[in-house]
Length: 269
Image (cartoon, rainbow, N blue to C red; front, side, top):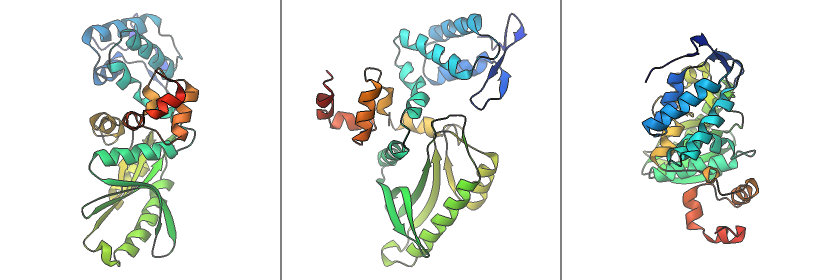
């Protein structure tokens, strides 16, 4: 398949979520569809449609919406994967459902996870969004959720998370029950980190997880690998029904399967 960047050999500039412009690339669209597991014939159809329809100044969001609509019409399971980013954005406005999602992700990795726990530090107490523990390993996690996918997590966040985590570690290193434990601080977001955030975290030993960071092992890949799909991917639920379930603390599809009585309350069959 040719990776064309133009329509009739003319470069088409599109607008990203950040507001910046970039040339439209069929190669990027092709990669997204391949990553979603779309069939070759479907990819050809979508790219052909987008190339004939695209115009200067169109947003990546509109391109995504059109591509997804075609995927959905093709009735392929890849449409669920391709809609994952939008489904995460629909978890808001509160960041709490995202924290539950991350807790479930760690659980599927074999950790015991707690959400929204206040921990005593050497100097003061701190609320951590997620604590994940397995054997003598403990992860202290700060979640940064954004409804705007163009948002970046700036350097201020890893700076204060590092200091909070260090205060907790300092206290726990002196506690008998945490002898021989290793502690790791995390910042996890559904969007992206600034360059300075990444540089500082690498230098300071803080772990970062963003939508596509680290490359090939980001949040998207981990959600798919451990099958922690949010209920917002379900197309047969209305916005009101999804919000009801989220308010009940039911964030993932696996949670919904465990609490089928919640579907009865919604009168969904």
